[in-house]
Amino acid sequence: MRLLLNLPKIIAIPLILVILTACVILSSVFFVLLLIPVAIGGFSIWRRLKLVERARDEHVIDSEFTVIEKRQDDL
Image (cartoon, rainbow, N blue to C red; front, top):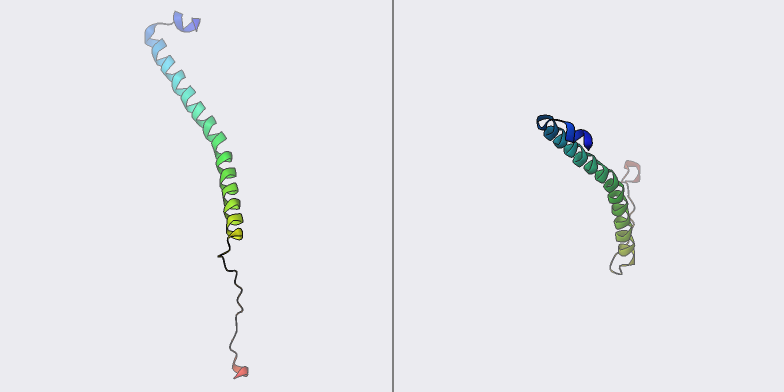
């Protein structure tokens, strides 16, 4: 900080603004890098909870189907 005190104001003010801008950008990038894994983990946990909730629901009907083919030699 002493270096900034010895600099002329014409150089010191833009330098402080550049340092401030760089700090804001770096902190934003750091926050995004932390937020992405948390968001992915939260989404996967939410999907698992929805699947468990759907499996517990009594009104859900599980169904299976079979494809029946019509062949010429069966006619």
